[in-house]
Length: 399
Image (cartoon, rainbow, N blue to C red; front, side):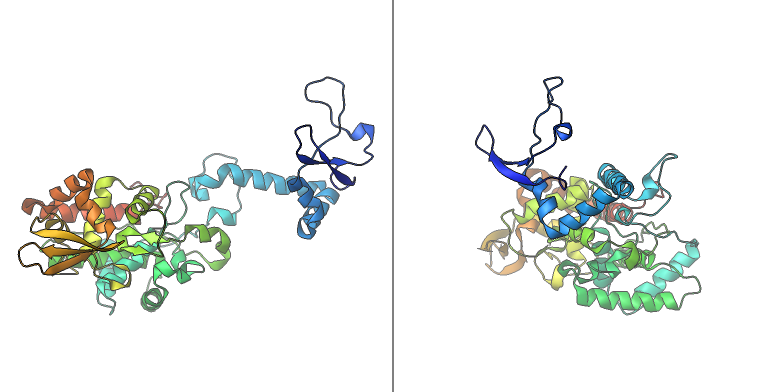
């Protein structure tokens, strides 16, 4: 209909411009939707006409017109993508009708052919923590790799280690220079292993090892649970354009904003938190832990309310709720925490930091973790929330 006839613009009874065919055959006219047996001229919009007049769309339209079988196949694939796009990878599909081929928009990840014993895991942790990278570098890389997970459509996450591929390796929020340094070191470690463990597993395991070390500094011997089995996706398995929508433009957990937005930083934090499937208590404990671990973007010091950076303590909450400090605005997203008696500035903070002291619900969670007898609870809860983030995209295991 579109390509066979020429079309002209006419005004509808309501005065809108629309397109009608010139000299259309009676048998080509569609039947009226409400009057049986009556045929009327079809009408099209500018959007329809674009498929005829735009040179690139015209090529596609003509191919569909000349090859109905090809059109049927493309339509079937597009419809399948439309109705399955939010199901995540193919591993989550059930039933006999699951397509056998890997479709690139399903973010395929190759399966691994190895397992790791407890002794092998501990050996890898030792290599990672003593490889020359800092705790913060290991934790940041693991976090940045995993934080892309969205429970809305099950995309993103650490599995696949796509943080080493375009476009993620170049995202500003991933600190490309630091990321390259970490990935080079992890690749060096991988090459020298007897068993080729995936970079994806090494990224997560490096973060785990660093957190255990930080907890040990605080006086707590705790093991961060780890399950091997992540694969390393290739560039051929990655649709670069479709991953661009996952690029973070903010991350309250690392106290970072790409630029100023109409939406407040603390509201952006809530948005990221719900996409990652985290609860308010999990958000709170992760925030406090990330701050004292020194994981701020660019190693800034806003919100790092501790004199023992790199140690997994509850200092963030202790100092946040300490009434001996007064909060003094400096700019739109910067505050000084000043000693009430001496007037000396002790800490600096952002809106994201201080919302955990000003919002009544978040303040209640903060005060729980600020208690002297909840130091161990803080460490355990942090580890539990951390593991949840690292395993959010592990659909092959029961979390």
